[in-house]
Image 1 (cartoon, rainbow, N blue to C red):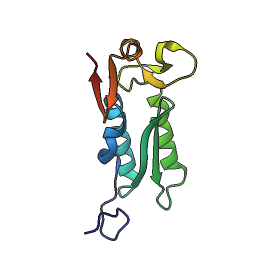
Image 2 (cartoon, one colour):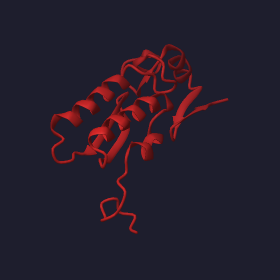
Image 3 (cartoon, rainbow, N blue to C red):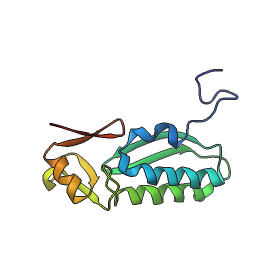
Image 4 (spheres, rainbow, N blue to C red):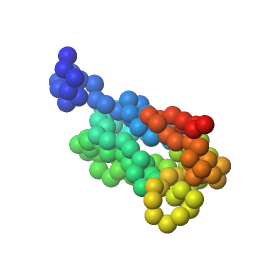
Length: 132
C-alpha cells in the first residue's frame, strides 16, 4: 500500500495522528473535536493542525455536504483553545512572554505563563519540557 493518504484504500490522516503538533493542554479539546467530526464525517481528512498566534488551527479537507456544520465545530474548538492553557489545560488566555508587546504568543494559565516567561518550560513535539 502507498504512503500517499489520497491513494485508493489509504486511511486518511485524522487528528489523533497529529495531536503531538501542539501542547498537551489541548489534547482533550482535540480528542473531543475528533469525536464530534467523526460522528458526522467519519472519513474526514486532516490537512493541517498547528498552533498559530497563540491559538489552535485545524484545517480539514471538507467532505461533500459538510456545509457550515464542520466549520462550526472547528471554529468552536479554535476559540476554546484561546481560553485554554496549551501547557496544562487549565483556563488561560493568549499572552506574550512577560506580557510584553509583540513577540511569541501562547495560550497560557498564570502558572505556566510565569514558567514560560522565565524560559523554564517549552513545548517540544507535544510534550512540555523543563529547562534546568
